[in-house]
Length: 385
Image: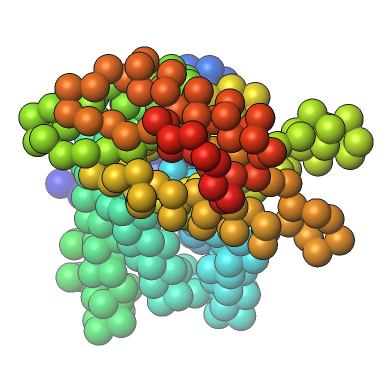
């Protein structure tokens, strides 16, 4: 049985329109996810490209076929951009436009009025490359975001691999050879793309929803300004660490830090300046401690750090390095704010509230003793930070 290419393309268009409407109204309008937005754009471009190809073989193919190729390659570029937004930022627009523009220029110069496959060599290579790049981005996602990303990566890799197979066959035997028409021709490709379209649209809905849930979890556990753990999440994780310490019998240390004269900074230079200093202090903390340590914004200009497997002497060194990093991050035209620290040892079997209370008393002593220093809970004399 011979598959009619035009009929398959028409079926693809109907399904693409349905998927676009469902995906836009069910997923994108609800989540406003960047990834969902890019997939809507990709669906629209795939739809337009397939519609343009319906004019193949008519006296309008001179413009319709190059346009169809450009739109389909743009759709593949959009899938790559969408996949990349799940992990980092999208590629630069000029990079996304490189493939479609090159395909359009080559197709326009390749006698499109008589050559059905004008620019076909570059078109197949661009599709293979862009779909494969999307597969790589999906494969590099954190598995915690969604298990479906692995299946999505495999699907994109298979699609990219199939276009690469078409490119090889095209280069070796040409687009008019019986082998190409049977195993790599447009009818078979459209059927495969039709199945992938439905599968990928469903998977992307799941992935977009999971991205939204991940964002909500981040907002629920992180401080909006500094990106550090908020107070509730810090206390939850610190209690988990305490239970681990009881089992492993290792020591730990807790630091309470407070920016000196922070209210004066806000009143004198404005709250935006104060927010900048809070962000700089948070960055100094993150750059100093280990990734396994806990850092939280305890409230206002007060921060809390839990150092598992460290003693108070190591905590003292960390406070000095944090203050040093903070002073280097402030412009030379301004005086860096000083910081007071209260440090408490965390022994196996300790109660978190009691450790925090001890560190808070030490912090108060450091403040009243002149600021810009630290006190270890149980000691009387402050030390300069």
